[in-house]
Image 1 (cartoon, rainbow, N blue to C red):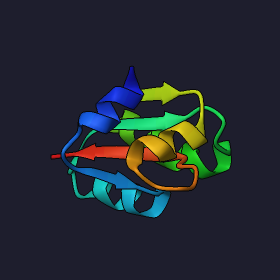
Image 2 (cartoon, rainbow, N blue to C red):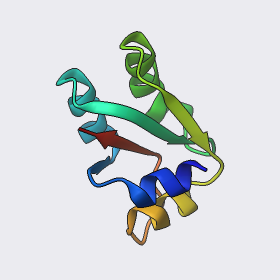
Image 3 (tube, rainbow, N blue to C red):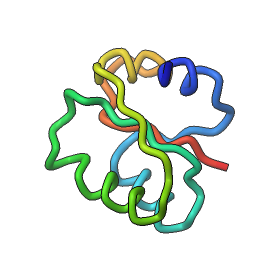
Image 4 (spheres, rainbow, N blue to C red):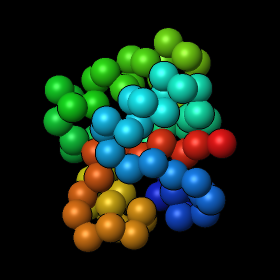
Length: 82
């Protein structure tokens, strides 16, 4: 389900640093996180999203999430932005 959201989204941000920055700037409307990503990488952004009451959705594969974003490598997270 969330892979389709990423495919249909007009504006996305891929990557941890850019996602955290967008969260701090209040640009994120939904966060999609790969369950197989390293928790050390995703914990900060997940906690920030939850603090801001932004919905966090989980998908099973970094590889599939990266493919849904149109990149050739895995993605630990994708922020759907305004």
